Amino acid sequence: MPREITAFSNPLVKRVRSLRDKKHRRDEGLFLAEGLRILTEAREAGVLPEYLFFAKGHETHALAATLIAATEAGGGEAIATDSDILSKLSGKDNPGAVVGVYRELPTTLDRIDRTRAPIWLVAERLRDPGNLGTILRTADAVGAGGLILVDDCVDPFSVEAVRASMGALFTIPIARAPWAQFHDWLRAGPGQLVGLALDGAVDYRAPDFTPPVFLFTGNEAQGLPPDYAAACDLRVKIPMHGKADSLNAAVATAVMAYRVLDRLSPHG
Image (cartoon, rainbow, N blue to C red; front, side, top):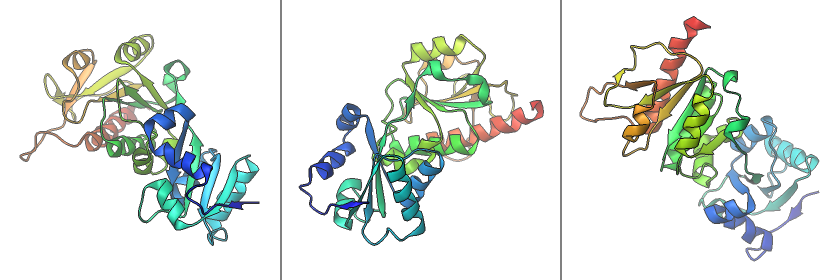
């Protein structure tokens, strides 16, 4: 049976609100997700919150009621509250009807079966949580095996990245590793590393690709470091016909991921 919390001074409210800060997320291994759609995607992926805050009066809404029941059945706690508390937790002036507190879902390279998917996405030093979330959505859309974050990327469990992923955070495995560790792991098994680059790159429409393909996107402002690009099996570029010299990192990843799928399809 859900309890009710409406006081900002409540210790649990303070604790959950602190998860908007990276340090507290890291210390507790917890993160926030907000909105009926995203939390429903999580439930359908088999991931349930440890705490579910919902707006009083929404417990009769079909999706909210299902989330409440599933949370309690899974050992979590459902908590009725008001829009002011939800706004404080989510950081939004117009919060969704639900906010969930989840255990972080990272994986490690040694737990990845690279043969289970023909395409994997790899990103290096991403700084924008919106880009990271969008790349997760792309990974889900193209059926990628997972997303590997190389070196110091923005936190995939930040409120902004989770929101931008639109639930893909709960369906796409995420591994994090420094470049040397990722490179050694990749070369220990099958895998074609395809870098999005400019120097020494071929038109993205020209080559065929050999699965599993690891599509490698660099930092938004600087692209891939020269030594990382040189380590790629293939470097590709997307022609620019206007004045811009490059696409947004997440957009380029999406364009290229679908091209890889198109060129893989004749091979099964």
